[in-house]
Each structure stands twice: as C-alpha cells, then as structure tokens.
Amino acid sequence: MTINKNSQFWMEVESGKTITVNGNEVPVCYWNLNVLRGQLKMYSVGLKPNRHWKITDVKKYFGFKGNNDELLGLVEGLIKEFKG
View 1: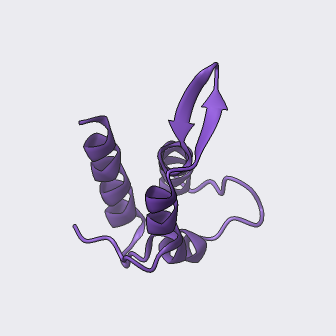
View 2: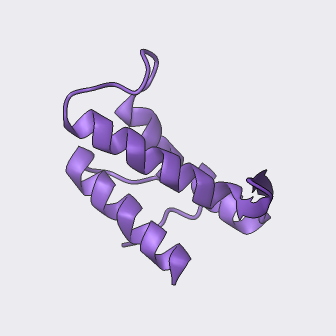
View 3: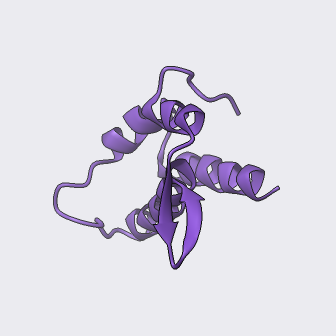
C-alpha cells in the first residue's frame, strides 16, 4: 500500500496536529481514519453517512483509487499501522 505524499491525509500525518478526545490527545489523521472506517462500512451496506457524502471525496483525501471494499481494506490497514 502506498500513500500519495500530496494527499490531504499525508499532510495531516506530517503536521502532527492533535485533538482532545475524552481527555486524551489523538492525532487528527488517526481520528479521521476511524470516523471514515465507520462511514465506509455504512456505505458498503447501501447507506450514505449523510446526504452530501461522496466516495470520490474519500479517494481525493487519501489519494487512493478503487472501489469501496478496497478503500475499506486500505483504511483498516492504516489503522493497524497506527496502532502498531
């Protein structure tokens, strides 16, 4: 799996910005990955997370190509890398 170094996601990884969640500092990129995983799971069963949500926006954010199942696999792989 290769990450596009010009993508918004990669810029957030390099910036190191964090947010506070339940008193803990969490990187913004990790938070977005977890939220996106839930959205992709909803989309895979035929539900849109909200009426303005588009899969092409997800692809642009990460710089990935592929269908929903491939994107979900990539996102879950990135989450495993962040945990490890």
